Image (cartoon, rainbow, N blue to C red; front, side, top):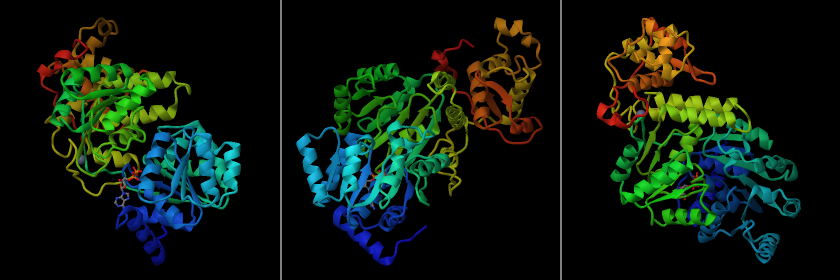
Length: 525
Ligand code: ADP
Ligand code: ZN
């Protein structure tokens, strides 16, 4: 990785100090800025709050010519342009909110070389006339924000980003710099390929966010858990994510009736209503926003103190992106993930009904998310490992696992062996629900009809509630001793699972929640 030469470093630090009042670089900023200074293509992956904007803004200020910044959202552009102007950097945005007169004015300023940065949406830039105009303009560099939008492997593919592949041909002299917060290895490479970058610098920051406390629960009553954290953080800003609009409305209403300043946010509301709710949150007139995942891209609120997922996201990419909206100021924040076995079933159905049919990539991402939920290893470690990174410490001190909040059973191996052998007795042809019922000794007709009440493993765990057994199955999936196969999530033993039957390997299972909390669980066990 190219370290900046002393004069370049000095020049960058001067710009940081003069325009932004900062006197040092955040991790990887120096390398990313140096690529911009040297005109070398780059892919920069830094977590939310990692300071990506400055990585292109500082070189744009230091270099001659105009920097183009491609950004997907008009609201986001406006914030950035306002912030730059407030620092004394001449910048503008070209988008549909400008009048013809304003647009001419910006064009004139560009022609006279008065601007250092111009923000533009991809579809606008790619319009014939705009391209022609910028071909006449001396460009320093081109920065692409939210670059994962170009990749179908990412969590937010936008077709209009695909057209950006022509940039390298149309503007051969400008270096192209792609920025994103969340990207697996595959997405990072895809970004570079799609954009046709020339031997790009790959600058990948750490995905760990040590100031976030991660907790995962599979509660009997989700709303009670939501309320508990909202109450604990009363008066502070938080986001609650739900899977469906209906749940968003229900949850927001319920929170409001309990006296919390909560507002809904989803694509079913009018634009106007959505903006008002968003502004109320930014202006601290509301504390809690209850939202579908439509909320938050480009929301820059640094003091969000908690993010609750009232349902399982469909991938770890999504989870990291959404939970990452907490604690952008670097102060401690809570991320609570509540899930049930049903969430994955709902997602699987949605994916299978989706436009790409049963998208293998999406199903794989979902399976990884399920493993994350059922896992009992450090949450920070599980996240960074998923993105191909390692953690330095064994104990993060900031997740339910490392804080010892998980209540583990004393003899997990014996328990796991009972469950795994039942899966084998069922010829690995049944799902988690059915298997749990057999172990619980349920007298459901189907079990008797199939003769499974005569299996040696029938009723083997009858002293436990069905819901508890069901959870252990999920945990064994989460720890990769079992896997779910096919459309119906048929349970199969993995190699590690077979090893457990021989007494090798160390599964970990948690004690079930106290029975009183089970009142509202669905299946009559
Ligand atoms: P990202 O786009 O990666 O989410 P931003 O560019 O919005 O992050 O930066 C996050 C915050 O960090 C902003 O408030 C920004 O002003 C601040 N920041 C950026 N660079 C530095 C720096 N070198 N020193 C101190 N603060 C910085
Ligand atoms: Zn941990």
